[in-house]
Image (cartoon, rainbow, N blue to C red; front, side):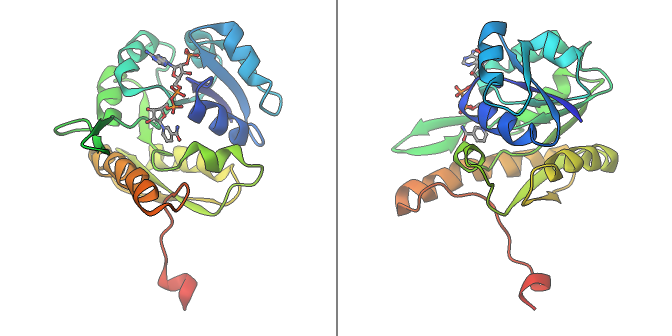
Length: 210
Ligand SMILES: NC(=O)c1ccc[n+]([C@@H]2O[C@H](COP(=O)([O-])OP(=O)(O)OC[C@H]3O[C@@H](n4cnc5c(N)ncnc54)[C@H](OP(=O)(O)O)[C@@H]3O)[C@@H](O)[C@H]2O)c1
C-alpha cells in the first residue's frame, strides 16, 4: 500500500512510519517538508512531503498529530477523498497526577470523520506506545480497530497486518473509538503507577490457551 504518515516527524509518527515502511511505500507528511525528508531517512525507502503532498500521492493516511491540531485535517478534505484515513489520535490531559481523557463525550476519530465526510475513517494504533514500534521487531499485540463499515475495517486491518506480530481486532463502528481512545490514558497510568515499562493491548483467547 502507498501510505502517508501525517505528523510523521513526531514520536509516534516516526515509529509507525518505520514499521509500515517494511511492507508499504511510506510518505512522511510534515508542515515542514524538509523535516519530513529528514524523518524519511529513518524508514525503509520512504520519502517526505508537506501534508497535502503526502496525502495526495497515497491511498491511505495515518494521522499521528496532537488532538489540538486536528483542525488542520479539514484542509486535506479533497486530497483524502475516497481514501482510507486511520486515526491514532488520543485526546489526553494531565490532571491530579494522572493522565485523563480530555473529551466529555465522543472521540477524536469521530471528529475526523466529521471533518472528512468523503473519506473512509478508522481508528487504530491508539493504545500502542511508540516505544514498541521504535524497536527492530514489534512484540505481539492486538490493535483495536473501529470503523463504520466492514470494508473500511478490512482496509485498515490489511495495513495493520503489514507489520509482523500485529493482530487487528474489529471493535465495531466508529462510535466505539471513544472506548478505544479512553483505554490509552489507562494504559499509560498503569505503566507509570506500576513501573512496568511501556504497556500495550494484548488479549488472551481460549483458542490460544486451549
Ligand atoms: N507517542 C506515542 O507513543 C503515541 C502512541 C499512540 C498514539 N499517539 C498519538 O499520536 C499523536 C502524536 O503523538 P506524538 O507523541 O507522536 O506527538 P509529537 O511527538 O508531539 O508529534 C506530533 C507531530 O504532529 C505534528 N503537528 C501538527 N500540528 C502540530 C501542533 N499544532 N503542535 C505540535 N505538533 C503538531 C508535528 O509534525 P510537523 O511539525 O512535522 O508537521 C509533530 O511532529 C497524538 O494524538 C497521540 O495521542 C501517540
